[in-house]
Image 1: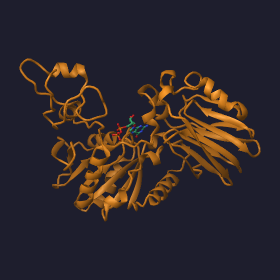
Image 2: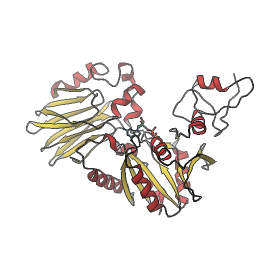
Image 3: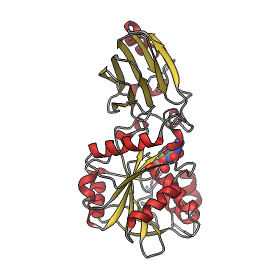
Image 4: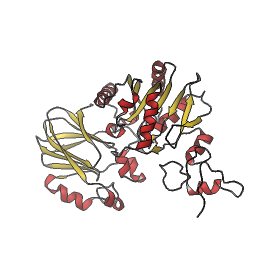
Length: 371
Ligand code: GDP
């Protein structure tokens, strides 16, 4: 058929199929750019960068990412690790602590706007510290920001000033944590930044690096996101994504359950109260997500019968590809949150035994209650 086209910005092979992969451009935009006079094409990412100074999310394969991290580890720099506070496990870059070496790291907890009003921000930062330490990371500081609203981005900039010591700053993160939104917010809030510069590639990768100049010869450098399979976001279509990626502060809903009752979080997760006195469980998930209470003894059959219909998302057409729910049992003796990766959490007040289910690969973890 036609000869292959390459982006004249970044050199990636032009393609119109996979939005999340490099070289993507929608077919209609491609048709517009291509004229009889010229075969010069910018991929969507380079186009937006050139014309709107806007960074688009992009991901690369694991082996390329490892090379990129090695590269960063060899440089003298400050590292910003952007984390989705609603999906800590899905935000982990495996082995990051080994790659950063002696370079200082700031852990940036993003999506602060989704935290319920009553949650102590101090506690969340403390929790971020502990989680980071569990991963072998020793951040010099943590900060909670909302890339969307811009909240605390000034604090982040102040921290960068404090810890950068005249060095470059690399921003790393898995996909969907909001890294691109954050960088765009930084650009927006720092009007001095006129032009984003793409420079030579990270060696061994197919991507150019994007640099935002600090004005002293050093730069804030965006890196491609690494895909993390353990994310609910990869299991759902774009129309369902807003249900698991809430856009407003979560509002708690209390469900009184007796032992041997089950609560479904649409078709995405399940919570069984196995043993203990009747108590109220506080659910923190998107307001729109359908919750359904039923008897434990009927729960399996109920799920089978109603998945994709009453229990949706996932939508009916998606259930064939939707992974089975995996069961995690917890014995509870203090006030805890049962956290469903990327979805939200349920606070358990009193002692008891519970089982929490999430799709295969999506983590369920227990933590001391945030509230
Ligand atoms: P990237 O893959 O890490 O570059 O992530 P994006 O910047 O593309 O963001 C992923 C998703 O998270 C998008 O749907 C964003 O709208 C959403 N998002 C990013 N930052 C925030 C935030 O601060 N708050 C909320 N509520 N959503 C955010």
